[in-house]
Amino acid sequence: MQRVLSQAYFHSIGPFLARNCRGMASELQKPVETSIRSKLTETFQPVVLEVLNESHMHSVPKGSETHFKVVVVSDKFESIPLIKRHRLVNESLQEELNSGVHALSIVAKTCKQWEDSGQKIGKSPPCMGGAGL
Image 1 (cartoon, rainbow, N blue to C red):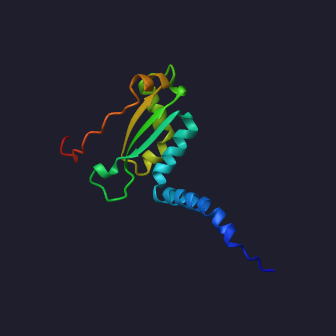
Image 2 (spheres, helix red, strand yellow):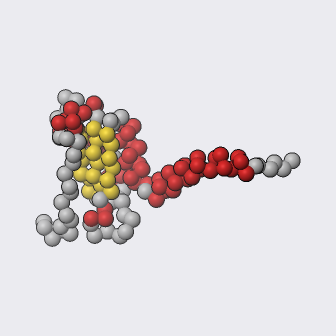
């Protein structure tokens, strides 16, 4: 038996499909960013999480996912020194760092530190293209 779906049915699910298809398309187009976001969320349950793809600031092909800045604000960083926070973030992203992520800038703060900072992060410096070494 063939089922005929009404126009009203498609009208009712249209917004749902559009939202979810866009999200799926974004994940397919940005697999490394999506993986970073997922792993940091799972590991740190952050109050604030920003994953910024800064690859466009470097000499890489358009659409690359090689240079990132992450901002992770989590209560899990309470009483943990900054260097250990960075190590924890690096450990959680080891797979990405071993398979194409060339640079990772980390801002790892407690909720109080985030509030005290005015909830602002500094701009990343321009790419030196290797000439500055």
